[in-house]
Amino acid sequence: MDSFREFRGELDRIFNTNAAAYTDTDTDTEWVPAVDIKEAKDAYEVVADVPGVDPKNIDVSIEDSVLTVKGERKSESKDEGEGFTRTERAYGSFYRRFTLPDTVDAENISAKTEHGVLKLYIPKKEKVLPKKISVEG
Image (cartoon, rainbow, N blue to C red; front, side, top):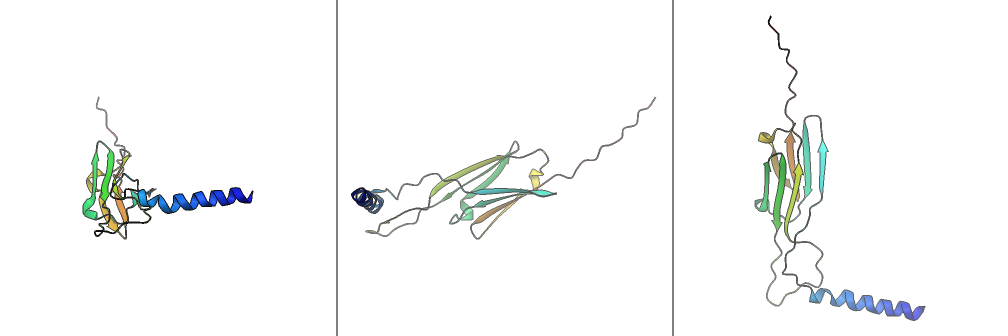
């Protein structure tokens, strides 16, 4: 049993220390930011984790009741001869879509970033009260 543990430990050591050396860190990939959606009495709030993303690289749009959030986190540039020994943070583009209910006021949606968090404020339309229509006769 001890020889198996030693063998496994040796394999882990080899692959964990050398795998990063062969990883292409210049290749950007897609990633998906974590998102929370809260509903209040008068609005929805969408909160997305976008650390390291320049606000200029975030695009928020709405079309046919579908809210689209997309952007890009650029990879860090490295000096000549420099390399990473381990890369865990994702870089590249992201894309999220959410279907909104008919009750939202699409004209007044606002977005801001603060401390690596994108916050979208999506107000609800004022409720339209039923109107009594008189019948003449």
